[in-house]
Length: 190
Length: 170
Image 1: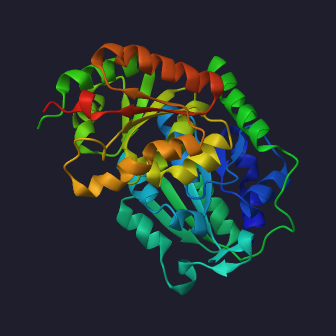
Image 2: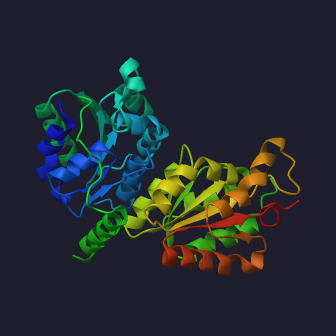
Image 3: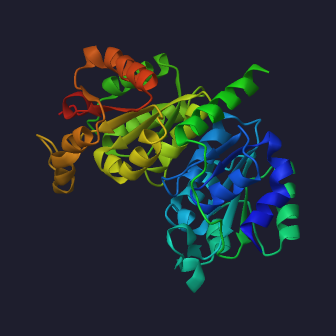
């Protein structure tokens, strides 16, 4: 399963969500499918995409928030699972693309390649719904169900360690950030 | 416990006066009253963290959502948050009001706090983070308001160091 195919499969459903991605391949691939003002790419600060999603979902309880996390990023901030589980916002969907690799820096294997089980960790942290998927159709179904549901969900999507040729997009980081905030403020005025 | 309840109340009320509605926190002795007040106030969302750096992401999310927030932590928590501050708050121009209890300075009895006290201000200066002190009850409200104003206008982290003089009644 390729992460790009997963993103493509769920892309239409993201139109009305607030989306936060991690840096590198995940950001570049979502951007390549077509940037939208409701997408925020956290191009550094590894580990904090899930915390950003938590802040958004707690402050905007009527708005669906999707985080596209990765195994390397989540392993840097495993405590975030316990904090998310503690407050378990109903409007937060946490997707972890697990390619068992720090792909964006050259493909070094992470601990999920040697047996660390992110589904088990997320469940034990107290995330109410946790599942692992290995096929695009299963991913799409699981993500749709989580988006339509009312329970904090972590989806571990096992994907191949393959990504785009480059990671730099034509969207400046600061432009992205202002656009994202302006989009949210415009929703509030509606 | 000689943590000043009076000072904690003044700080908490000043934060609310600035429209701060989300506080992230990791407990430390000087912050116990503040955290309890945040928990008991229905107008304030308290997010208890596992590690302080999470608070940078949570505050950024709150800022995008249009909610004013602040981080409550010890200076060792600030040390644990540095990458998040640099590679999120600085990189993306996020206003971040950080209230940091300034442990490990004159009067510190706990040996384990003393190294953090040595490096806190040097790091704040090195990182280019504007900072001031909350050290007298009379100036707390004004200084919090001014710190919040600067964070919002400059879109960057701003720090207030909570001192022993204000927080500890002994």
